[in-house]
Image (tube, rainbow, N blue to C red; front, side, top):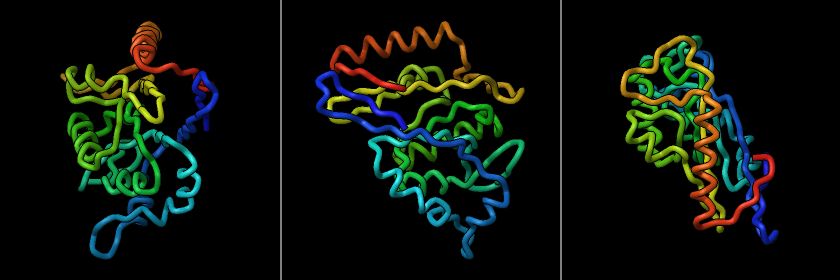
Length: 198
């Protein structure tokens, strides 16, 4: 949990960062309903009150999403309903760049983005092409006069290549510094923000 304060000291935002969110097969089986659908609300129900105390809840989605052919370690693919149910319980945003981003190669990245977009859940970290990367990196979160730039990178993808044309930002201190400088300049065009612990 971290708090960001406006310079006038009158308002604050509370951010919760959570994860890693992944699914081993016993967890997938536990969420499967009799009709074949998946429901995770009971798994995460105790987090609802905690999440509701924050303005933004940002979760590291360390799995790809799909609607079939699910798999656990070492190459994860989880039911898309996990994102739906966590969003309903208070997760506002997902970050997707991590060492499991390419577990299902291009199909996994495409499906994950498709389901998050279909559910209307803001996200950043993996991109189907450079155009979307430029549009959605950083991801800006705005509320009550605050504007927060969310940047997401990974140290690697477990030896799996990033599919041609896709973008999964890797940790590069020079590029990260440039991204922060760009976000800072953009933020100061409209907002004045002093962040602690972000």
